Image (cartoon, rainbow, N blue to C red; front, side):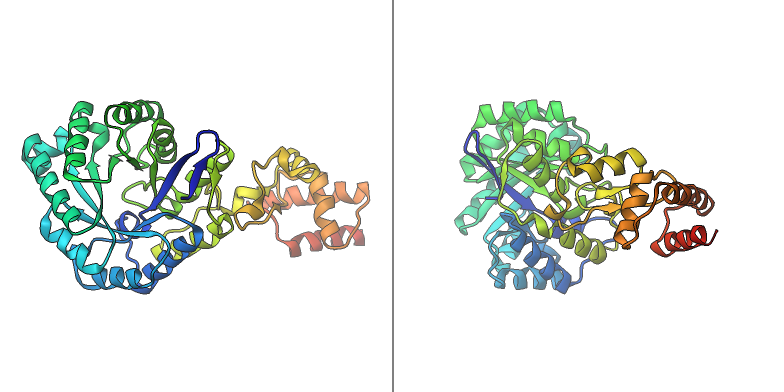
Length: 381
């Protein structure tokens, strides 16, 4: 259990799909050794379930999944499948303890992708679930494109899944078109109608994946799907580090996760995926605790709480006072104090003028050696 609401006693389980949906990012391929390392890191971090790949792909994919299973990690290990018996057989062959069975639920997909009927979807899904349950699997039934599906059909879909023995329903905002307010209302409706476990799986096409994931949990979902850095198809998925820290600091939930690992995990996945970790990335980006603006730097130096919502050491980062065009005298004095130099007011003022001028010419903040050179030049005057 990674997230706990102390006010209600409700538990929310974290399902990480970096190794499945994250690797489905266009152009991303994890080496088998990288998949195993990521799985081990996420296990140590404290996620509840890992969705590790698609066994029916065969070859290296199956080999990696089998190796992860043999590691006997703490999370449940889940594999992704179509609602096809042969897919599920491939997953069982890998030794996983859980399967995700995915099928389209929106009329758009049913008519134009599957070219089938709603009745066919229900019947095919039920047969796949029944087969998986007979093999002792934990089963998540994934409603692809749930956010564009008729909500009453989703109720029918969940009820049929329950009857077949499924353990939870994955609500997929497949193309990221739903708003947090609407998604909370829909999840509330589905949960009240079915009383069934629901997992949120949200995409970031309109920049709302994290907000939608959180809203769905507030609406009644008790599982939340995430990926490291928000990696995923097109604009990505809800980011693991964002969802967990939002629940911890915005909603005051308890999270049973090693947040100190966030930066290391994010950096590793960034390198393994070949996707740069933006400096401005929330929670784990280099600029998260970097202060340059004079007012901000002065406030952060007086009390970090003035401009930081949580401590950088909570996620494996450090506070930085950046010296550049927007710096103020307080930051200059602080920076030179780090060098063991105590500046007079006149020296600080003169250095600040030089700093701003040079920063504009270079179009960036300054390096330590450049600051020392400015200091030496002023002392020589």
